[in-house]
Amino acid sequence: MLDIQFIRDNPELVAEKSKQKGYSVDITQLLGFDAARREILQRVEGLRRQRNELATGSKGRQPSDDQMKAGRQLKDQVADLEHKLAAVEQEFTALLKKVPNMPLDDVPVGTSEDENVVVKTWGDKPAFDFEPKNHWQIGEAKGWIDKERATKVAASRFVYLKGDLVLLEFALWQFAFNKLTDESVIKQVIADNNLNVSPKPFVPVLPPAVAKKEVFEATGRLNKEEQTYKIEGEDLWLNASAEHTLAPMYLDEILSEADLPLRYVGYTTAFRREAGTYGKDMEGLFRLHQFNKLEMESFNLPEESLQEHLLLVAIQEYLMQQLGLPYQLLNKCTADIGFPNARGMDINAWLPGQNKYRETHTADYMTDFQAQAMKTRVRRSDGSIQLAHTNDATAFSQRPLIAIIENFQTANGDVKIPEVLQPYIGGKTEI
RNA sequence: GGAAGGGUGUCCGAGUGGUCGAUGGAAACGGUCUUGAAAACCGUCGUGCCGGCAACGGUACCGUGGGUUCGAAUCCCACCCCUUCCGCCA
Image (cartoon, rainbow, N blue to C red):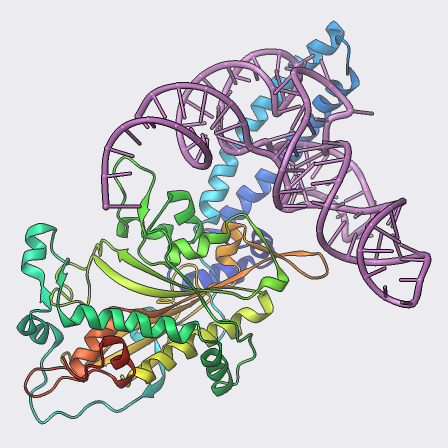
């Protein structure tokens, strides 16, 4: 949620930036509700004051008939105004929640993902002396991917993952966990990228995979309701990323400045309905209803959060470079960064089987937008209280497995294992 | 799932209709004392919203939502959560 005070002070800017992100919100109407709300609130509070004075004034003894009568009258007036207030407040909050976070100035203005800006291209695309296959051709030949039986048992866009690919997936998680919990690695990444942030390592987490609707909404992702699975008969929704349960961890809490940054790396199975993607990426592992992901989440001081965002991106690059996967780094445009984002970067890995760069990582810079709704605050060392800032970013999903299969395939249909993963897969060099 | 008990501020814990936003203790912070520390003593010590340049004033919040009442942390109803026992179970 955006701070209403900021909107009051900058109505044109908010309208303009919202439009750049592809959201239309009537700011004038919002401010109208805001003014009405405050006007009624003041009247309600005045009446409540009278009521309180009457009550404390007659403390300990039976009030007179006149006082009782005045009290009854006040009660009706207060109830009436409170009704009006609730109605206005509802309209106000509904509109306020529709205002997206403001993009930073270095976010390119654009109307679709085509206008994302490539800021870096890393690694050489592999040269094959044979026609490279895509990952589902290799995966099905190896018996790693069985979608037909998964469709029979569950539904389309589900998969049985089997054999060495499963071991490779777990190697990937283990590798990432080891790097992210190693302070010397974080230090090195900070030094290599000239960043000015704490070298504190990440705390590994296995979070719940479900959250209440109210909590889900607080993360600013409520507009994705149609993308989310709900558990029948419960107020519980399946997470579409560990971020959905990591970000609200400190819901309604005041953190200490000394404890920040708080860094977590959480593993979870993610569920997405993928509404509106019928027929898109139907083959292989690229777009499934259920997949696994390792997500980084940070809670920061306001003045440190942008550096933290850059750190998370640097870590993503580090991880991809360690695997030796060619990729592009993109500064996402206003239309693509997402509702709660102030900035967002993607890593797209090269997929020889599709002859394209495709998205494997995202890094989201949220400023205090999520914290505003989640009421996650920091007590500064001078005693003052501020909203915390949040950052999240993919460490790995299953998509890098696709990139590994396609980039490191051999002529006879095997896949070479990146050196850094070999210790986690029994020393195998090829599967 | 059944039975019983319970949810109060950072923590412990009092309060069962009227100056209660809430007694007391601990922790924390500031100070006195001390060579220093501990102890002791003194002081400070919840959050949101509205108004105000500010000082400050008002209002709301005692699991959540509703109700009763002139007045609710306190009474009533529903729900959520926790603890213990029983049952079931990875």
